[in-house]
Amino acid sequence: MNEGQLRLLVVDDHHSIRKLCVTIGNSLGFDCSETNSAETALAQLEMFSPDLVLADLMMANMSGLDFLKEIKRISSHTEIAIMTGHGSIETAVKAMRLGAYDYITKPFRVEEFKLLLQRMEEKVRLVTENQFLRDRMRNELELNGIVGSSAKIEDVLRLVARLKDTRTPVLIMGESGTGKELVARAIHYRGAFSSRPFVAVDCGSLVPTLIESELFGYEKGAFTGAVKSKEGLFQSAHGGTIFLDQIGELPLEMQAKLLRVLQEKEVRPVGSNQRVKVDVRVIAATNQDLEVSYKEGRFRKDLFFRLNVVAIQLPPLRERRSDIPTLVHYFLNKFSPKKNMQVSQAAMNALLAYEWPGNVRELENCMERAVALGTHNFIEINDLPPAIGQGSGEPVGETRVAANDLSGTDLEELERTTIQRVFEETNGDKALTGRMLGISRATLYRKLKRYNIGQRAKSASAALSVS
Image (tube, rainbow, N blue to C red; front, top):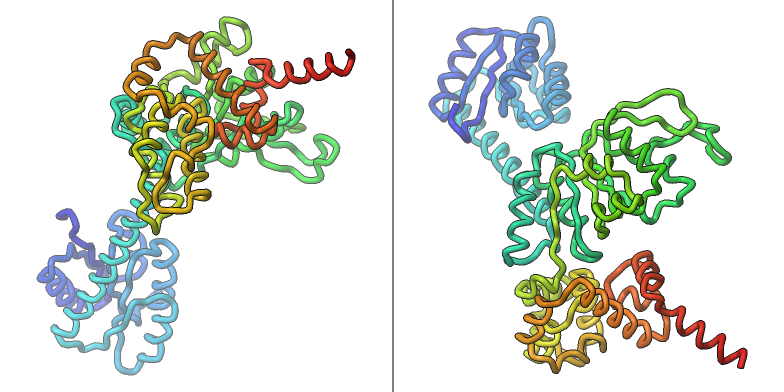
């Protein structure tokens, strides 16, 4: 069969009718097959999988209506036309109500029969094309946010293309806001698993006492409040992908149980003695250095190597500044699709000079703010958050070189001072600080604690009250 050639199956107990239909079908370019009974046709469905079926309404052991119901149950995309005598037109109309495309009365003229086949062909091709466009749009939507043409992003996209059809465990590493979940979704939705479940789990937000029941499920009566059994997130992802974000936040006890699940490919719900088989692809993500974590005893070494079969390192935004203009216009189109919004050179210089501790997520929030607060179709430097606009005086080229020359310690200090500055500008409003930086509340709390931000103000206030 040639690529694009539609398959036609003719079902009729009269040899002469089948021969005529197949001859006409072949002349129109169909890949034709024939059979003299409904039972034989149903047996051939899996092997032949026709696009079009022509079936006689009156057959020996199975009526055309029953045959129609079976075909629609087995292969809903197949288009069926009924061939009938003059005395059975009412039954043919009933067949159309059950899903038949049309009917044709016997004896029929060749031109009439050709026209029927051509109309059926047109419908099948339109449905196929529509499904293709919907699938392509869905894939593009799932990839929203992975924007850029820098070398590092191109490397990431090449890895996504190679991993999309595999079951290989993947570990995605990168700072907060770099798009780890977007990459995980791209791996899932670009490949063979796109129609299967994708379950995202934020390990850092799970309540420690409930992690096991959330991941593996529980039986009725397993604990107070368990009034009915519930399947866990691993079971929900069966046949598809489970995305374990912030995997480094899992307690050591749960790491051991997760390792067993990955090795045995089965879970045991809380309160149950029975194990349930699960078939899932695991994609994990972290903003921590897990190699350092396992050396310091905070992460299991064996789990690290089980997850780290293929590693994807997402670059921070400061390491791919050439993508910033593209990202800026992408987000402007996203938040203001009906306006042709532009960015002034001063504003763009400020965006390029800024260090983006919140990475792409912070840039997205920045553009949403600029669209919401701006009064014109032109983004000026005053429309940007103060933390970004204040750094606009520094030449972009010098900033780019300086960023490349910074050591790990320098970058940590830069992150600390940026968070400190935004925290002070918001008068200690943690929710607003997190939105301006483009990081989650949990991440903000960890960084405030790590850099002792906010504690100093409390200590100074306490000292003043004592004095």
